[in-house]
Length: 432
Image 1 (cartoon, rainbow, N blue to C red):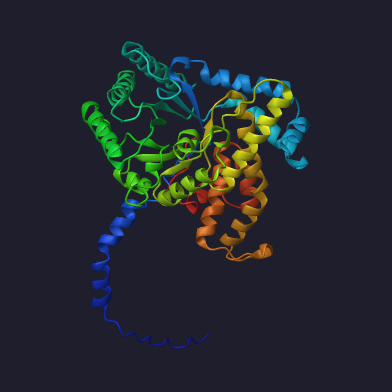
Image 2 (image 1 turned 90 degrees about the vertical axis):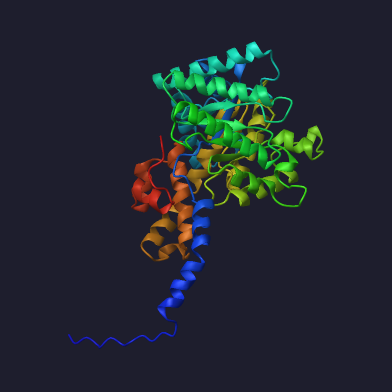
């Protein structure tokens, strides 16, 4: 078959112009790569459980799971009753209930923070010293025995003048204890609360650097979360978004931004009866956090509800419905993590998360499969690469937390885990 002669394509700009443009934007390219590296490629826990340091024991995680299972047995003993309380569709009742129970038996807590701040309060120095050393010993032992949650660490006291020395000392004792017991464990998370100025983040970076110099972890290995609990962390006196400056000041060590529901609401003058994750001041703060963190690899966590599912069944059901609604609301707004303050919150945390990912499974899988085939197929939607990244990210998060199974996702999409990770912008499969 004769081939048509290739036509010469004419251009007007010499190669020197392209080279000149590349040179002029080299610094911008480097800045974009540094500031916006994208998703870190690791599993994000669906929640963080805070336990006061004096109440933390070797059995805390299992105890939370057992209490959560007991609450289910007492207040919603089967799939139908649990679904009725939460308003789950009939087709989700059995799969969600089964997965929630399995999760509570296997891995009730995904992220645990041993609290030396508000949940612990001021104590004599000797008492807090002992608690910090004990926490390190228990965490190291749990890691060695394979009983630790995937992520675990401490929330120290903040770096404000009144408690600065105490916070630094507790951090030092905890990290030193871990190193003496075998080194920095995988999944270590540190939380810096009540940050108001970027300079406090810079100080935390210096603490991490000095500890690394003293003990030899590779530079940059110790990261930390920034807890957003003050108005100054959102909007500075110059009208700029302070939280964006904090991410920059962390020099790549910031792993998350955690919204503090009650401290932030109180700092805005919101009355106690109206302090909630869905108050307008909360939505504003989290929207600013979300935009500041987008593309940086720093992840978001919503706060908590202080309405505990305790007491008679009717009261427990009311608290469950509230918690379930708030978690679902957060998930729809792309806040994929939140705080849980009581074992009774675990059933509704996982029910909301599992229903969210299972409800979106078939639609997300169909659209992703159509995108990979480069056709809208029967979806009637022509998705772009950014949307394909979001679709695959949805499925990956569902796999990470146990809402979805790899086999069913591969059957619906034709894609294995490695392919999903690549589409989601992850370099490697998430840690299990």
